[in-house]
Every structure is written in structure tokens, then in C-alpha cells.
Image (cartoon, rainbow, N blue to C red; front, side):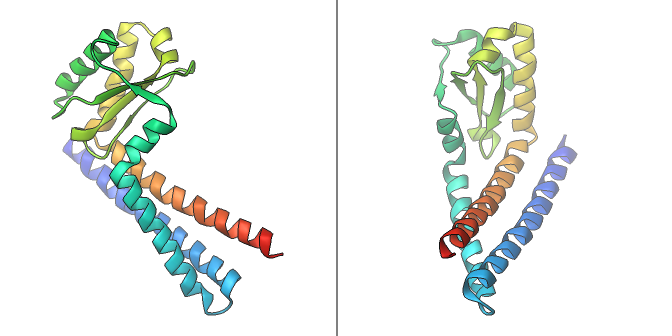
Length: 183
């Protein structure tokens, strides 16, 4: 298991470096496009600032932003005892240090995800569609899968990928809108 965690950390670093290179190159090209020959470095600075801001926001409250964007509602044992019990069982079986927060998303599509920076602050969200379609054993399998993402720290990898991709998309949009309005 620890080898998987180390592999995920290495993958996270490689992904960050590769996406940072793409982001900086994009910033450099945008800077050249807007500011001329010396503008590449201005573009690099802008790209770096955008990346730093998104990283700080994402690391401080990225999980809450994701849960809010999906309109997830936190549930307790009183609201949905079966789901709560399943998550608790899987938390114990996996040896997680803390109980993940549990959320339900009012969506008919069957889906689930885990989010958070570390196992101590993780959350698990499931859709109403998933709860309506699966029996207890099937739901337990889905929750076990999500708990494994928490245990192996896959959620950190996805968070890092989302930050970098969001930065690249934001910078691309700035460039495209700037080109549109400058013509």
C-alpha cells in the first residue's frame, strides 16, 4: 500500500511539472501576442500569479467548492442511517484515521466521488440516483472504492490536476477573449 502512495506522490509531482511547463509556455506565448517581443516574460508572470491564486484557493477550500458546485447536502446518521453505516464500516475496514463527511447530491444519475486534501479531512458524496439503484452490497462496493481513493491519496492527485488544468483553461480564455476584443 505504501508503495502505491509513493507512486501517487511521484505521479503528482510529474503531473505538476508537466502542466506547469504547459502553463508557463502558454503564458509566454500570450505575453508575446499581447505585449510584443519583451512581453513573453510578462505573460510568464501573469501565468504564475494565476496558478498561485488558484492553488491557494483550491488547497484552502477546493473540496468545499466542488461540493457546493455539485449542490451536495451533508447528511448525518439520522438522515440516512444505511449510507452512514456503510461509510463507517468501510472507514473502519480501511483503517482511515477519521470518518469522512458524507454528502448526497440530488441527481438522478448514478455517481459518487471522494474529495479532500488528506484522509483526516476527506468527504464522500453520492447521488440520489446511485442510492435509488443499488442494493446495500452494491453501495458498499462503491463506497469501498471511494474510500480506497482517500486511503491511497488519489484525491490529492486529482486536486492538483484540477488546479493546473483550471489555470490553463483560465489563461486560454483570457487569451481568446483578448484576441477577440483586440481585433
